[in-house]
Length: 195
Ligand SMILES: Cc1cc2nc3c(=O)[nH]c(=O)nc-3n(C[C@H](O)[C@H](O)[C@H](O)COP(=O)(O)O)c2cc1C
Image (cartoon, rainbow, N blue to C red; front, side, top):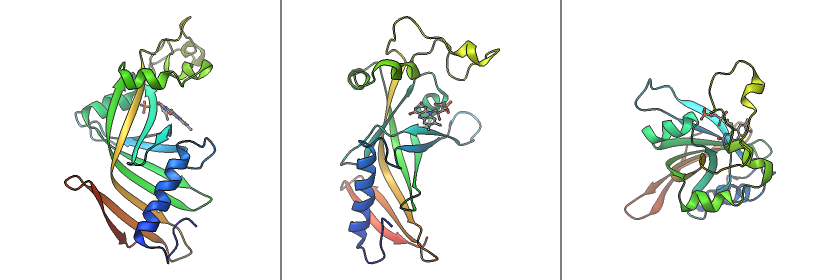
């Protein structure tokens, strides 16, 4: 268990934060893959969720994932920059849901600097000739890459957390907290909540 019932609220909050920061650097951490939900405000309001890889998680609760600028999620974030991220660690039985403001970085200094960390074949994820989501006659038609991988579509999404809801499963006595960032004081308003 990550959160214990004798923990103070600050201790529980810090334990969750520590695990997320670890996942930003440890490729085997259970929080490394997480789900991101978006809503396109200008189309039918149907939430869309998908798995992504956590690339970093900062002291200030900002986290990053990488994507191809042509994917639907980028259009959705452009239309509505509030995302919901969902993490689950089955070994610790902890779920963390984070509401965040997402910023899109494409062909700017941040994207250029992160692209340097994407090496070799990993670059293929962001450089296919055929745009993600396009209809193809057969799967192989989508497996084409240019001779040189260019970083034009490589995009870094930086998410700044504004609300955190954590749930620790524990027999029939689950534990949960809700923390909201106060922008005025740049502090967190923390409360235990009924699970
Ligand atoms: C385990 C896993 C990890 C993934 N990681 C990423 C990722 O880091 N970035 C990404 O753009 N897509 C990632 N994908 C693919 C997305 O889930 C999704 O299918 C794709 O990006 C298209 O999403 P969209 O059309 O909803 O934008 C991952 C899929 C899985 C199953």
